[in-house]
Image (cartoon, rainbow, N blue to C red):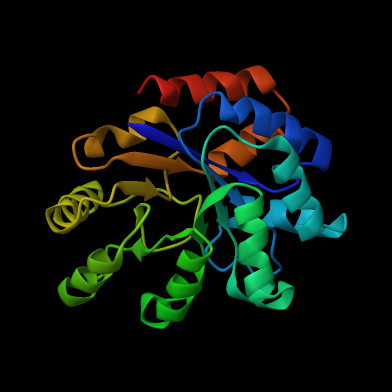
Length: 238
């Protein structure tokens, strides 16, 4: 089972983010890095509150790109942002900056699949894989079209809400993952609602990777690095 931990850029501050990134590299197969945004519609209260704190300190995309460029992570990076910050920065410049800092994947949750063709094209031109979402509500025809164009990995949403909530229908999640696997060889990464390694038990045979976000932010808030390390180790050995 591959492990995709989520970190919020510059959280809790720039120095500690760099330290946590170094720690995370030791345990991750891919690291998702969220870019703080004022209207993070896909994020629950834990990540949304953390985003607000980072933005209040004067977050700079240029500063983040420079840090990631200097760090040169040995594991793939998946940058997650919303459409407005990317367009405000300049989409081509943003994508080039992602490439320059070693990112491999781009996640933009507020661009629906039906409006993603142009985004997927320019993302691919910069050597990045556009990550598509599948939810429990994704119908048969839409799923077929998504899997036909999928690249990198498919982000399977385990619930119908926002990050940090609990999974209420594990059978539905497992069935959806198995259905995806019948249609594509692109790896399936399960996200939203995973708070400990036991949460992935119902899906072990159906998914390829697990994404954990809100719980990691909570552990960072506790300021207990050893607890965070143990959390990482539990997923690394899952």
